[in-house]
Amino acid sequence: MTTLNQDLKEKLSRLNVLEKLIVVNVAVFLIGLLVTPLLGWFELSSVFGTYLTSPWTIITYAFVHYDFIHLGLNMLWLYFIARMFLNLFSPKMALNIYFLGAIMGGVFYLLFYGFLPKSQMGAPLVGASASIRALLIFLCAYMPKQEVRVFTFNLKLWYIGAAIAAIDVLNLFGANGGGSLAHLGGVALGYVYAKQLTKGQDIGKGFEGIADRLASLFTFKKKSPLKTVHKNKSKVGGYAKADFDQFSNQKKIDIILDKIGKSGYESLTSEEKELLFRAGK
Figure 1 (cartoon, rainbow, N blue to C red):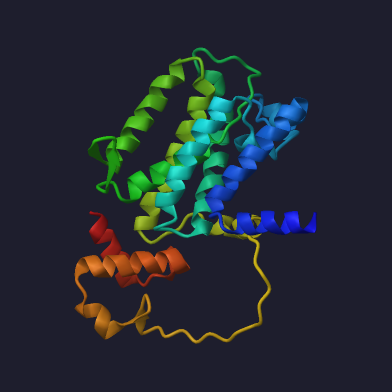
Figure 2 (cartoon, helix red, strand yellow):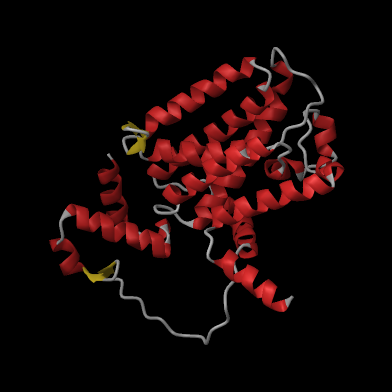
């Protein structure tokens, strides 16, 4: 049993933080297959008075899926978004956006559900879609001109973001209007977060204390002797600044992206952030 636990911890330690969230979502789904009534404690009620008696559901609903297709599509989106997001930004920021997206989705649902033309009071909200929308729209808003490959052609990210937001607006008048409200809450959070970050303001900083504790739950580290590390601030991504200045723009971008992958977006200097932002354009 000890060996099995160690193997599981080792495998989990190799996953990035968003992949670990995928594991949590799948685990909750499997538990729900065994004890479905238990998941009712984690759904977000559309009745505000009911929500007040279970305030934790503003976050926990985002981990509840009853349908395999619903779970599969959400986790597939999250997997591909994770690969792009964590190449540029830190795991802490990913957690900030994921959980704040869930909260904003829940807020939109609670505030506006009763105004939907086909609303059915009492239908609970479940699913990670609002969190995933927040991550995706963040990328679309932060680097809108970045192109991604879709089948046989390239699309700018802002085209994808605009199309997804438009679909969610149209779906407000469909059978899943409540879910679309939550999606739009995630869209709003991701867009505002990105635009504020381009101005140098990380609106998720206040949430980071909670995110740190959540991140610690998904981190498995082996104990090692303490070491003293001296950082050379005159270096960029491990290169002397004089060497860095002589590199081509593409080489500089590669070095900066490597630095983000190792130390997170916050480790960049203002000059490096500016260079990365210009390259995104």
